[in-house]
Length: 79
Image (cartoon, rainbow, N blue to C red):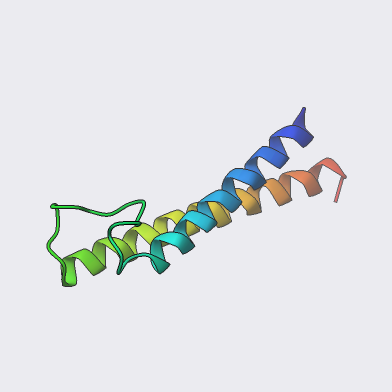
């Protein structure tokens, strides 16, 4: 059961890292951007700040989930 949970955590973490990368790459193209702010922020500094914060949050959450899964797997082996 724990092995399945570890695999699920790694998959979710990898998905979040991929989403952060896609958000960063597609920022200049709002038609294909999955997390486009829309009318909330006009294009400019605030929109770039919002994008930077979102990319950092997505990427950091993904890395933390993968790190948690790795440490839990190593704890299972008694290391």
